[in-house]
Length: 215
Image (cartoon, rainbow, N blue to C red):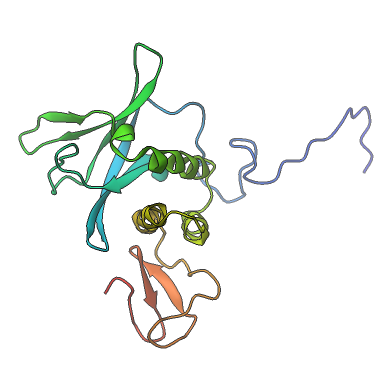
């Protein structure tokens, strides 16, 4: 076929630009991409876990039902007290008078009152915060969560503290990996040695022997 008076042709790879291409069969023509600036407020999931003998907490901002940003570190109840039954809330971006920005966490208590923890971006170690910004940048570019977790766990950092924190971030994001997702190629079950691990509700489960890393 000849194209006459054609000035040029642009080819877009599916998924390279939001709203440009939609796969055939997508009934509602919806896109889950992150568009425009970050909203002032994002729904957030609170994830608590133990890393060694330490209690950790993570705030995962959600956009279009996908992880968009993460803040995490050790629980310090004198500066970061949040009742243990709280598992969701909002992360609010606040612009201060001097032009600096901070992120607050807001949740509703059992009486229906809103409580705000100011500056969660500053309550954790500054180095943790800087690495969290990098990881949040990867999340915003919509790398599949399992690949984000594999990327984080593959990092080799000089500081033992940062390595511990890195493991905490990976554990927090594990919960958002869709069930049925296969583990990274080459990952073997510690019980039977088979490469038959899949994620189920955030835990790696061996389909060969039933062993679970969370069990």
